[in-house]
Image (cartoon, rainbow, N blue to C red; front, side):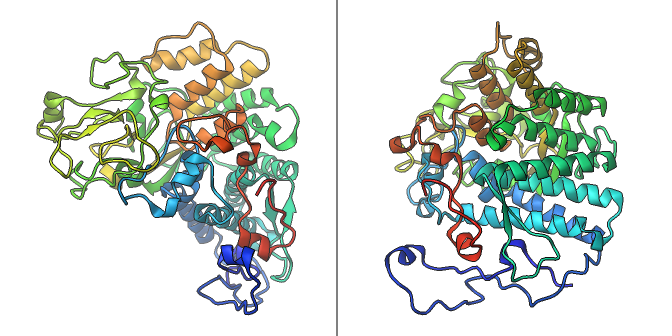
Length: 516
C-alpha cells in the first residue's frame, strides 16, 4: 500500500498568509511544491511490514526529538529556561526564535506548523500499525499504542485538541477533532492497553524501545497534568502507584549527575532516543570551542537567563570548581583543569572565562578573551560572548557528539512526579525532594512548597524538554520573565499554540484556539 500521511489526506495549501488576510485571491492552484498531495485513493488494507513500519516510526520520532527546532524549541525556547538571542545577524532567522521566548508567535510560525504536522503524522502512522488489518503481534501493538499516546499527548498539551482519523477512512473524509478530555481518555486507554504487553525490562541498552516502565512513566505524566485537560482533580494516587511500578521494574535514583547523560547503562534511564546529541552540545557553545570530533566549533546560539542560573546554589558570578555550587550546576574548568582533562569545555552552566584544551585562555573571533557574561542586552543586539551557556551532553564523553543516546524518560523525573502528587494530596514531599537534593550535592530544604517543587524540577531537568509542561501545570507559563513581551504577561492565550493556518484550511472540523 501507499502510506497516507495524517495531515496530508486533503491538500494543504501553502498560501502567503498575510496576503490571505488582506487581499482576495482568484487563482489558488495546488502545487506539489506548496503541499504534499495524498497519494491516490489507495484503500487501507493493513501495514504490509509491521516491524519495519514500527522501526521507521521510532526512527522518525527520534529524529524529531533530536532536532533543536520544532518540538524541542516549542517546549524549551518558549520558557524562562532557554532562549536564542540574535548575535549580529546570527540566529536572526526572521525572529523565529525570539518570538518563542517573548510569547509573540503567530499561527504562521514555522515550528508550530512543522511540529503539528510531525506529531499528527506520528499518531496516524501508529494507528495504522494498531489497526487489526495490519495484524500486529501483541507487543508490536503495545509499542504502537505507546508511541501514539506519547505523540498525541504533546498534540493535546500544545494545542488543547487532537485531530483523529481511522486508517480505513477515505481520503475525502475530514479527520474528526477530539476534545481535550476525549484525547486525554484515548491516551490513558492506549497506555493501559499497552503496558501489559510491553516487555518487563530494567536498566538496559535495549531501552531505546518502550518497556513497561516507560508505559508507567507516560501514564504518570498524563495523569499528573490531567486537570488542564479534563477540568477534574487528577488521580494523584494513580501517579504514585505508576511511579512505584517503575521502581518495581528496577529503576531508581543514581549518583553522578552528568554521568547519566553518557551512553552507559544507568539506573535512571527509562527510555532513550537513538538520535545524535550534537544539537544539545553545539547549539550554545562558541564558534571557537572545539572537541576532537568537531573541530569546526559551536554555533553560538542557545543560552539561559540569569534568573534561571541563580536558582542553583553556588557563587552567583562564577561557576569554577570550589564555588560552592550544587552538582547539577556543573563547573567551568580553570587553566589547570582544562589542561588535565585535555578539553576546555566544562559541564552544566558555562559562565566567565573559557579555556583551550591546553589550559590557555580561549579567545573570541576578534581576539578578545572569551568570557561568557551573565547578563544579555536583549533578544537582539548581542555580541559573541553574551549569555551563560548550557551543556549536559559533553563532547568529551565516549561517543562525543555523535553518540545516538538522548534521554527521553528519566527516573529522577518520576521521583519528583511522585513527590508532587503526594504534596498535592496533602502530604509532605520534603523527604523525597531532599533525598534527590542530597544525592546532587545540594543543601536539604526545611519544607517544600509548590514554588520549591517547580524550582527543583527546573534544576534537575533543564533542557530535557519538560519546562513548558511544568510551568503550565504550576500556573507559571504566563508570568513575567526577562525579555517576555509585557503585553503577553498574564494572557492565558499563550498557554496553547495556535492551530496552523493551513491545518484550518484543510480540515473544517478544526477551530482556531481563542485569541489567535
